[in-house]
Image 1 (cartoon, rainbow, N blue to C red):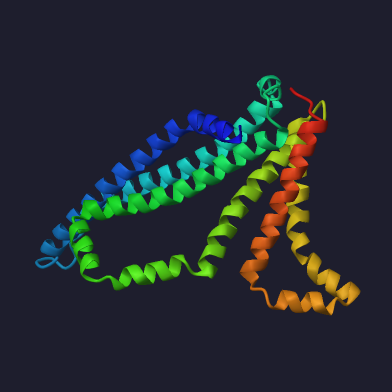
Image 2 (cartoon, rainbow, N blue to C red):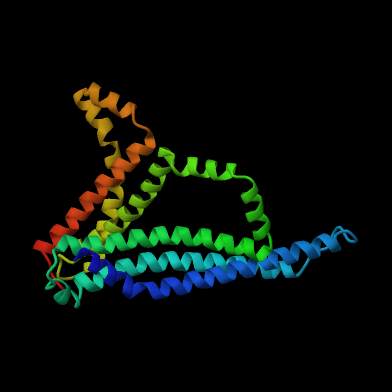
Length: 272
């Protein structure tokens, strides 16, 4: 049933995502063509006039702004739609329908979190595709493929980087940090929903309080060591990299926020 919920989430949001990514890819190709044209014109003109400046560079600058704008809009769409659908499906009018489905509360919340994490991964991959689109626009794509085909060392180096434990930890940390922030926003909405009035203000206050408290929790292990003299615990921490500790901390906070959301929705639901 969890898979069906995830499919339902994608079915409701994928069209706008594809439109934005498609627009970004096309603009990336046009940007590549524009940059390549500018470089050719400037290299030819500057041979006669060292102080020559091309007006077409303004077009490239505008295209860059448009691409950046679409990137920002796409990410905000992913995050905003996840938050909006959580509030609409589980805390507002549609909640009367969603909470009567033959699924558990944790499945309803988890489906939205998993969908968001998948979208984040697709967003990163889409940026790589748009980078390839810009290279295509410059006309250097075939030369790049040819050079990579003649030299396989790059593939071995790339695989070594991707399969490196530190790189995997880094990617996992960013991914769980993204889901942690989403679950934090979910929790703020859930806490605000406990009150009959001023729900938005309560949610904002919850966000501010948790924004102060949660980062300080990362210092708890150090306080524990100093207070109780846990030497063995300290030695275990010393053998961990900072990246590993950040990842573990992020996973723990994900579990706490997720459990808090499920508890409120299951036992203290107050639909608008």
